[in-house]
Amino acid sequence: SQQGEEDPQALSIQEGENATMNCSYKTSINNLQWYRQNSGRGLVHLILIRSNEREKHSGRLRVTLDTSKKSSSLLITASRAADTASYFCATDKAGTALIFGKGTTLSVSS
Amino acid sequence: GAGVSQSPSNKVTEKGKDVELRCDPISGHTALYWYRQSLGQGLEFLIYFQGNSAPDKSGLPSDRFSAERTGGSVSTLTIQRTQQEDSAVYLCASSPVAEVRGYTFGSGTRLTVV
Image (cartoon, rainbow over all chains, first blue to last red; front, side, top):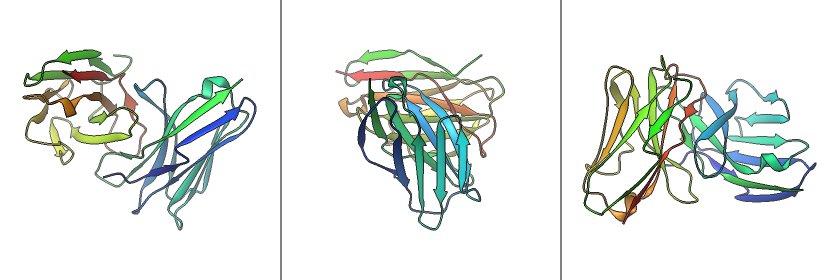
């Protein structure tokens, strides 16, 4: 069963614009992670935010977590064509593997 | 190795045949995970290993699917009597411990059952 659900399913923007993707989940979590996938193959870990954190930054990425609303957002600032990919949120509970959402497909055009 | 290695990268098999997919995790990573991804879909959890044992195999879709891990390293996922609905990309990931860490994924095996 899927724990996280990303929104929107697809997003198209121009280079230089910011991209915001949202993730909602259903049950309590220890942490939430975001991954990127290019060309339908292996995923790359982007950032991890723990349940007691509210915001985290990594380069052009900003992740927020609202445990009261069971939601997270991933903001990519000043997007580039190379950011074109699918983005997935994943949640875990102690002793289990990550459960991934269906992903947001981001297209950045130049 | 430097990354998670999966083989083969592509596999085309006839319906009814058995297939074996291999995953070689990063050296020293004790946790290993198998997922599958159908075209345009999210990742479906299959099974995970901590060392050689599988604490959670709840995601295996049927008894045609099995997996093992030996020596705390290489894992094989076996699908018996393949069906067309088994066609998907099978992804393997590993992490240092089964705790709060990001996973390192392999490039996957694309399985096509014809």
